[in-house]
Length: 91
Image (tube, rainbow, N blue to C red; front, side, top):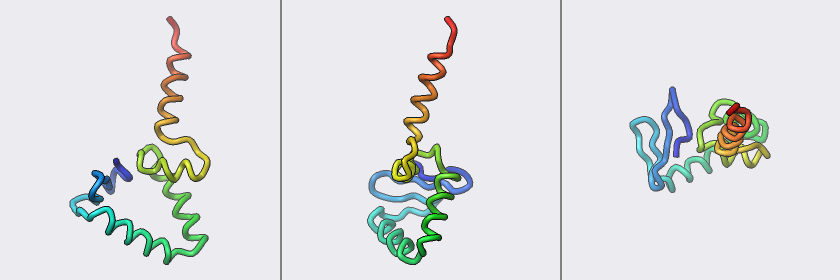
């Protein structure tokens, strides 16, 4: 699952997180994220959430964050767009 694409390629394969050419076990990355999250104040966390949605929506890794914010997932948007396109086609 991709979290970020261009200029940073970040994805996970179920066991490891891949950040460009760096590979880290997911459990270690989760611990790193927990430590970084603890360092952020409320305003910084809110800014990071907002910026992540603005900058990385469309990547399926952002879907959990979009859903927490009450927004449609990338898959929901893609399916709705495909259905609207199909409904608007002339035969």
